[in-house]
Each structure stands twice: as C-alpha cells, then as structure tokens.
Image (cartoon, rainbow, N blue to C red):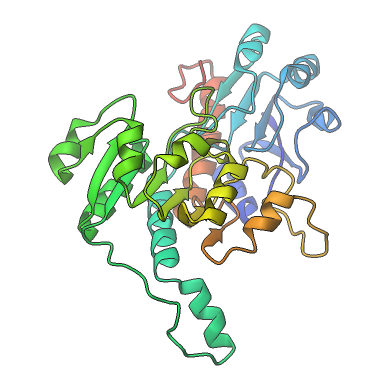
Length: 329
C-alpha cells in the first residue's frame, strides 16, 4: 500500500519507519494537509494525518478523486475530519483512541507541581545566582480538592495519581465510573458544584459542540478565587480571552496550558525568528503564574511507539476489509 503521511515531525519519523518495517511505501511530508497540498497524495491508497491537518469536505472530495480509500489519524481526536462526508464518499477512517494515558496524566500532575512550587521561576532565578526564597511559597497537595472534568482513560489515571497525593477528588463526566468512586473515595457531581469546591481543576474531556468553551467567564466566576486550572485536553475547551481576564483579576491563580485553541500554525514549529502575531499568546507569556507547553503531554517514547504501531495496524486492517476496532463510524 502507498501511504502519504502529512504533517510529519522530526520527533516521530523514526517511530513511523520502525512501525512500518518496510511493509508499505511511505511518502512523508512536513506540510499540513490542505487544499494546496492535497495533490501530494496522488497515487496513494491512504493518507495519514495529525491534529492540525484539514480533512474537510472539499479536501475529501479531492482525495476521493485521487483514489485515496483510507484516512488514518495519528491522534485520538477527529474533529478535523468531516466524518459524515467521508462516509458518503466511502472513505474509511480510523484513529488512535489510546496510546498512553499515563503520559498525559503524569504530565498533567507535573504541571500542577511545577506551578504550585514555582519550579520554572526558581530555575531562572538560580541561573542568575539568585538563591532567595521570596515569592516561592507553594501549598501542600495533600488535602486539596481537585476537580477532574472527563474521567475516561486519562482522567482515571490522573485520579489514581492524585489519590496517592492525598487529594479529595471531585469528578464530572456524562458517564460515571463507579470503580473510581470505590477505589479513590471520589465523588461525581455537577460542573457548577465542582467549580465551587475545587482548589485545582483539570480538563480531560473531548472537544465537541457541547464542550467547546466549556470554561468561559460564567463558569470561571463560579470557581474559587485563586483556583489552579490545567488544560492538557483540547484547546477549544477553554475560552482563552476569558481565562486571561480571570488571570489578571486573580480569579484564576495558576494556569497550565498544554493545548491552545489557536495552536494551528503556531505549535510544533520553531518561531524563534518570527514576530509573534497572536496577542492572546503574547499576553499569556508575560504572566508568571502561567505555564505554557507546546502540546507535549503525550510526548513519550511509549506513546510514540503506540501511535505509530496502531496507525499501521489500522491501515492494514482496513485494507484487508476487516472490521477495525478503531474505525470512526
């Protein structure tokens, strides 16, 4: 099978080659899939895309004309593909629903600790030979109430880790996991109650029409003053301007942002020689109580191996006409 892989990054090339193991003919492109680049898939049976690639209806139409039969996503989310239109065209799609919930959960808790204990600020002080402890007071995680929004595979691991810290856990999801309640003495509640009672809130919900801007000015106003908010889920879960306003007022005391609603064209790239055009990002970068990372929560060797292997397994399953458990339906 000939496969065009779009939006390939240096940190994943070796993993993709190793997982393929010479079975298929690969054409790797560092460019995004778009109307301008879709013809790069000419002569290919399948394409493989990442989170920022555009698989909207016009692009799917062109892929269909080119003879592309399969779309494999190297991600769990698939909001960047017009699923209904792909089905109409007879294009089969598959995703990687789970690659390492531990990678994202561990990173999430790491961000909590880094913000709480002001580790980034400490590092830069030491680099300037400033060993003062002024302004570095944190808090014990033990006994704090943490609200976990989304208790799927990642949220469950976050709960497990935080239970070990001695945190009180409040949970929100449309599907309740009774095992979390029993194992970790956690409590499911509604969003408003979670916001009112939590010292820390972490987001692990999928992005869809109902969860878009789940965290906005109204919901933030219900939170404890000085709350810590962590988003290692999807950028669109948070209304960025409302979070900035809350950071300026002190309503939000700490913000960890691994994902960003305007990250396309910004994240995963080196812009060190560019003038930053994104005013919201520029404002966030000035705040000492904000920790920004470049969508790297998933970035472990285990996760990259799993993503690559599952991606090729999905493609081979669809090519053989078999039922694919990861197929988007």
